[in-house]
Image (cartoon, each protein chain N blue to C red):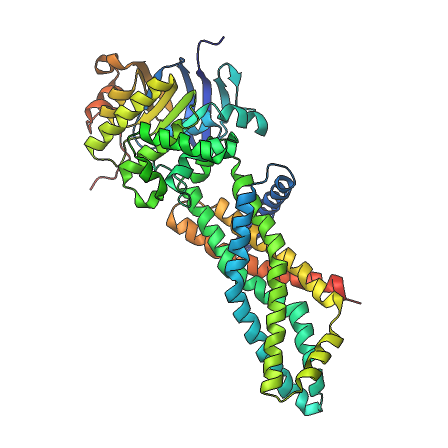
Length: 259
Length: 257
């Protein structure tokens, strides 16, 4: 009984290590290609639009409601200790350091990571990637590199917008529902905000952008079979990107703020 | 100057325990149209992908114009690929691009041709396969199967390659459209003076487009010779295949009912 269990455990461990090796090799190759010409500028711009501009509504909606809920929840907790004045501080620090980058990352992973895996996966199973090679175009440079560059560059801007909209959400609840003085709320927000809060969030966003696009491209590029393979690639892209975002979030937070 | 445009010696390719190619020897002369016939799963597509460098053979030698291509660097591979055009079985058109952008893709992205000039080339190549300039503005999903094959053919010839591969060019087409595609292939190959390798199990297509034919069975070329000799090859595999008999040396992997 215990031997089959051990065998299963061994196989799972080997499969896990093999997957880490494959993703690392893919990432290394992608980064090496990204720093060498040629760069497909039109493809990069297209991906920036796809990741940044078209994600604005979903990220904006997530941010505004998160900021509003944060203000409301903080109030119910802090009112017990007569510490309501700390609400603007809690909202701005939580949003810029954690919730802005993590929630924007997770939303983009769901929207963009899935779409990338599906698009590249379909190209793989319909031989479009082979067709690129026969047209003397390196599919890695044409498909993967523009997405990675766009992800790394665009996510920080998206998170900056999410931070601003989230703080606005907190401001709306604070001023119009909890009867804060609007000038005092804004002053508290700006007084407590530090450069490192925003900067750490933007660094996180850039790393998350890399992870999301890497997972989308990797799972799409290596997909096999037909529709089922593409479906599996899409699911794996979103799940693995989400797990990696949460894992890296901890380590980046530790790097910036741990004493 | 090598006498063969394409030369394969002892090429093998396995996927795990499955041996797909088991020692392929093949010579294709410049300007010759070679057809490789064989049933499904006999290794025809793998053979083409090995020559193109999309798959790496386990052993053997593949020479293009006398140059060994099995161990090329990325840069040299791109240079050799410039000689090739390929018509994929399903067309493999880029569905996010318009038809003219598909045809102009190679000239723009790989040869650095200005967009307007490449657009004119695309329109001319679409004309060569019987499609008007208005088709160029459509997306591949808006075209019928036959039209997609024609666009894929236009894309394959857009860079005027020295070697063109056709992977099952008539599969999924009605007999009349299949004959139209066959005529276009013969015309395009002859106009370009290109060397061609086609893989098919459509005998009508094979007879029309091929100068020479090879029969692939279980990863081996069991017979090759001029197309004119195929009906008197004396090879039981070839005879069974061209007449489509269920009984013979080729056994299909089907379970008895």
